[in-house]
Image (cartoon, rainbow, N blue to C red; front, top):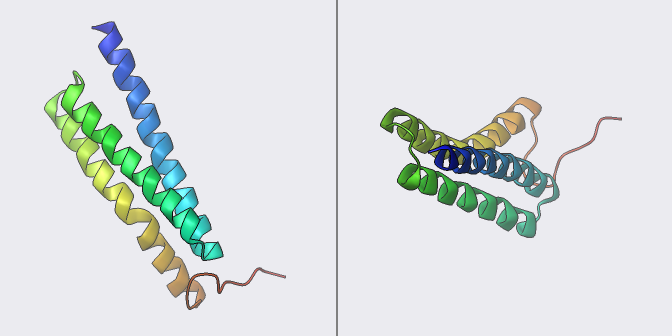
Length: 103
């Protein structure tokens, strides 16, 4: 029982780390207009989805927690692009790689 909980905790930690890496790589890809960074961001999100599926399928967590994890995994995919569009709208920039740094 303790080994299952430890494995679940480890997988959940990796889930959060993959989500953070996705957000950071997405932002870096948009700032630089880099397809390679965008592919890295997509790979991190795919890893996060795989981790969420693994936890939902093989962990001793109760159903409400598994549903929460599935909803979180879906939300992680939407948040960076949505925030990027919001930032562009707020700051009036037209696209990837067209930002200016403050003087």
